[in-house]
Length: 368
Image (cartoon, helix red, strand yellow):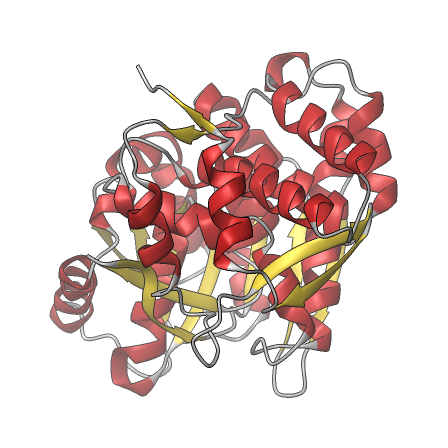
């Protein structure tokens, strides 16, 4: 069932349009926005092989002059060097300030394309067409763009809102199972910090780790509720001056794990799953929420097929050092998003290194 979610911001308004088969309507959607003629589609080779022809045909049929740039898949390519490739193609195709970048891919492509759009000619338009569950429910909405620094995730970036987010759930049929599970981490996050109704729906489902066996109505609930949660929070706090920080639940330790494993061994959603378990245990230890709620959360993470423990190869001191480089550190204090009950969370800098170390020591496992 098609649905439209509105993201209302002081300076920017855009829609998140969710409808099966909508990729073929990309050109018409952009034409209604009265965008400039030139469009550069940024994707990765695998996604473009599946969906590039549909996207390009739709854009050209609507009268757009279309070029494309491929960036290899993987977090390790989320770098300034990849951004330079997008710049080179934009220059070669004479993109102007009226032109548009279209991100056709997962979160990595979306983040990089958004950052390139934010910085090319001091800012041109971007449209997000997410093809992974994680990108659909999280990365494509809210205007956070950027690339990684070798010593930290997303340390280089800008806020740059899209003109449109177009979600076609049918493209998930080619999503690898591991990537679907990664997206479920962000869905569970929304249930924990914002939407108790979504959390309850996830608890009722017998299966969360396999798209093929997921009830169609539940998939619709997952996408719409998650997108609505993100839109609600972003509309209240566009540039993370307060409330929006709760969207980083599970991400503080997750980013440390990702950077210390070279962005290759553990993917983003898997790291967030681990991070939520650890944050939940920290919250229980300092009596912010109950051990029962922590166990309910962890059961969902396990049901989604996500890891719950830190890779054994990592050292606690290295993790603690990485946490201190996190962009959310304030006045030298590591800031954590911690749940207070299912559907609610707070941000605090009052978690001692001793508590963090204790929780980490209790949550290590070997990685094959």
